[in-house]
Image 1 (cartoon, rainbow, N blue to C red):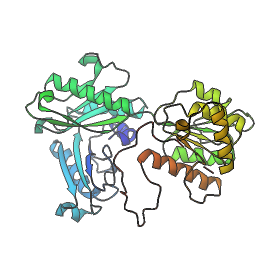
Image 2: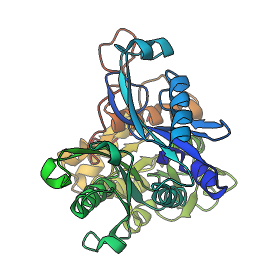
Image 3: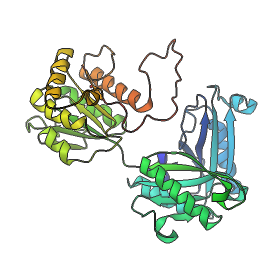
Image 4: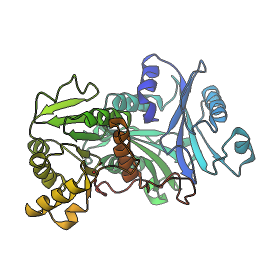
Length: 391
């Protein structure tokens, strides 16, 4: 649901009634992951997607029905389901969809409205909704924000409630906060003892966090194309270069931030995390070595450095001389990017972006034609997974 938060927040502000359908679980080769959503308002306007087109028509009808009767429902669509097959889910996967009416008289509307407002403002928050358990609780929601303390009481620790025992709310808030801290969206099982309602409960926890950072070091022509690609992939992109004549908004209009500073000193003072990707395009030892010496010791998602294989070998030698270990060097992607035969800045940017996505999602980077690898991989790699570089 939070993937279409901006549009839904506008609907809330306009006072529209709507129903939102959210993917809560997937199996096999499903096209969308948990959290993906589609919404339909009382006028029949639809936004978002839950299946890349496969079952949108059937889900649209479910949303209209939910708006009419005011009841939340969970429906499963799968290849083995004749009705689902008829509407087009032929990819072999299974998806469970939670459909929740968000009408003016809905008890869940206030907390979902808060969640949408928080998410669309860029604030980190997580919303937990019951997807299985007592029928009267399905669809109930609870919101946790990043600026609330895990030890605070129910008045300040979370908003809304799941409609059961207070202990269920506290347990759900703790689980949601843990998912938020990890920046994850997925399901959480709460056993009968924790739910205090006589049966286990399943929660869908959707985390909304600020976009991950891409920091591009080196204000060269290739960097401009990479900045555009980074924005396309949803990163907040910073360009850093020590040369003010090159690091300008005119040359990098798509960048969120342009920093004129020695790259290694900027990296020392800026904030990075396990989702940050660092792309070193400076191609100059006096910039590369002190920068990579620091970058390879940070818990970021990816570090890549541009250069020929000869440049790579020389750079590795210099890094060893300043104390970078062999284990740290294994984190470096260099030459940066996948082997696409790239020549132009745009092709090179695509090569780098492809490697970043493969690293993030656990892909092999090989052609799917003739391969026996899954099209949709299960989950992400660890936040401090392999780091990398494009020739």
